[in-house]
Length: 407
Image 1: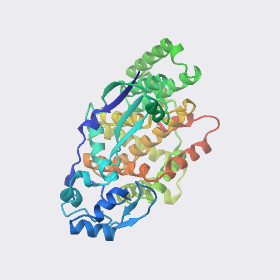
Image 2 (image 1 turned 60 degrees about the horizontal axis):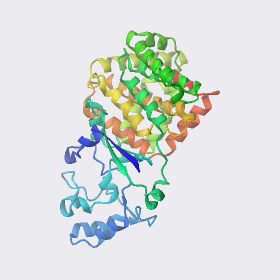
Image 3 (image 1 turned 90 degrees about the vertical axis):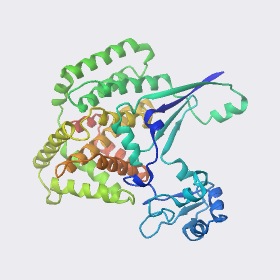
Image 4 (image 1 turned 180 degrees about the horizontal axis):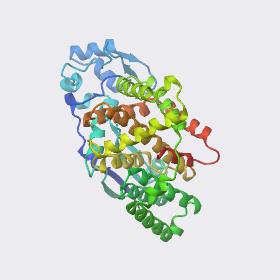
């Protein structure tokens, strides 16, 4: 007999679709798959509008049961079943059970292990960003542990999933607590995590044998965060304007391949390129000065905006680590997983900084920014590959160049 744990964050429990009030509804700008059962349900419907929708707007793909057809958007890029009130006609006429698997489950996610299920939501829905970022306790979790009987049938089903090791859970817990520790700046917390990762590499991730030393290091890092020593360490790290420009360029290329969310991100990206004067081939010193000004603007944003509550950006980092299953299955890639989190954080804070130079940013804009940014990841499989390729190119033997993004 074994146990299986289901982990449910507060943001998952509290989420509710805002329907017509959504700042960027999910019925526009992307491919909506229709499963075979739902396709037949629509073609056999007694509602004339839904039957017409099935005949004229469902394109058969027959790429599998779950991807039997796709929705052909109307001239506005919307699903034809989106009515004038920005609500779903199918939901209104036939009920929630009539929705396709895609429409019924979005934005819900789950990461499945043999011994654990992590429930989550994608920030590609801006209301998820609202719940994650702006609720102080959004990342607190509830754990439901159940005893399971290992029958032969169940063993066969579980074979497809590996267990989430105690080592992985402990590392995630240590890093999460370092994110939440008191410090002058969130970048200091990110530097503290690097110190922890380097120690973990030194002990070859044998956490159990070095638990006392690991706890001692954790307490030391907390002290260094609170008394400003970590901030002093970070001030000694140089920056790399060229590296930052290249990362922004990679994200810009990914944005160009979007439909939903593209206009919002593209406008901000063009404003950023204009501010950095990239069309005039500025000197390294001038670009460095521009990034210094952006960093100063970021500090102003964190001091006086809808992001001024300390939990907002810290919740995002916790969300990132939770959704990615940090540190990942292969401990040898832990620093790369951290690096990718750093690139996301760098891009978002740079976007927010440039936005705030011309206006006071609103909570709604932050929801749209985070929502659109996560659409990039959900619908552009090349982005992680391009980021990894660039990181490989600039690194010699390790991923410590990520520290250049801290200042």
